[in-house]
Length: 386
Ligand SMILES: *Cc1c(COP(=O)(O)O)cnc(C)c1O
Image (cartoon, rainbow, N blue to C red; front, side, top):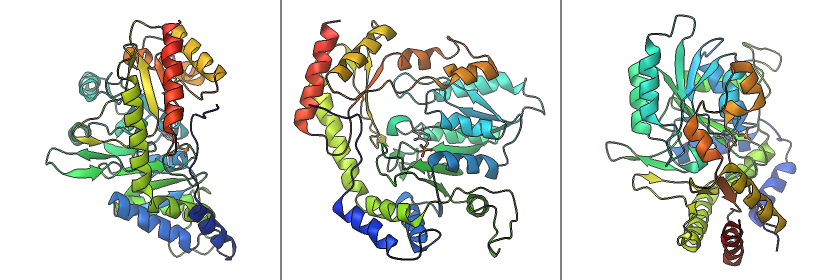
């Protein structure tokens, strides 16, 4: 039995929707683009949405739209996918990494307060603290009340990296449930095939700020202005457009997003049930003020295990046809980050402790109960045979 780590869920209706676009002359900048943006902003309850060709492109445009430049600082987490920090480097600004909370694996807001208090004295005019970029890791919302208070206190922009968290919700201190991406000044989502919903490649920027919206729209389309002709360019821009073919798939997937998220939550509950008596791993937990949008199913080995135990487990799972991964390698320990900034092991101990012990197990909408049983039986056996 072979079970992949992830598996896109493309329905017959999705294929019909894609094929329909191919019978029209509007393969890009057509009606499906407007429709996807409109439906997505309605879903998130943001005023505006701008579709782009990847989540990374969305992050890059937001860094530029917030005027973050050389030597500026952006607070973010080292426990994430590489592009949430790379987008800061694209503009020669610097990530100010803050370690994570062990339980949520998201940026630790208490540590952010401490770090900024310490830094306040040191930050000169040259290194200006500009923004905070919280990442809703694995679809679990960050502590947004705290993030917003930090941003208010230090006058920071907020860019939410919600690439892994489409449909996740957080109950704020006024008891109001809101979708992630709609808390900060702006946010991004991503639609690579391993994400909850996919457009093949693609991403979406969301914001309530008209100025950010207009800048992002222009920059994704070679810097053209509202009324510009094809060869008029008002500012430096890029080709970060998302084709109408991708948008049609996005619309079709968004139509069944609630069903998709329900299916994924059911898979999580089945896994948690199978693994609840296994004393060697920590399973992902639910939280009462958060609705998690399950991106992956990641268990963590208890502290008594070491990195090499985890790596042996990953190898043995793969030998048995079970897709798995070590989400994530800490960003600060990636070779070029070490080289550029001099980071070393020990700089962010919680991130390192967690990342040495994570095991992402097969996880997708239509994962069957028998497959979950097979994965769990093997995992338990492999650990007990270590
Ligand atoms: C997937 C992902 C991105 C980037 O999305 P792409 O569409 O692959 O560029 C950014 N941040 C996080 C946390 C992600 O998981």
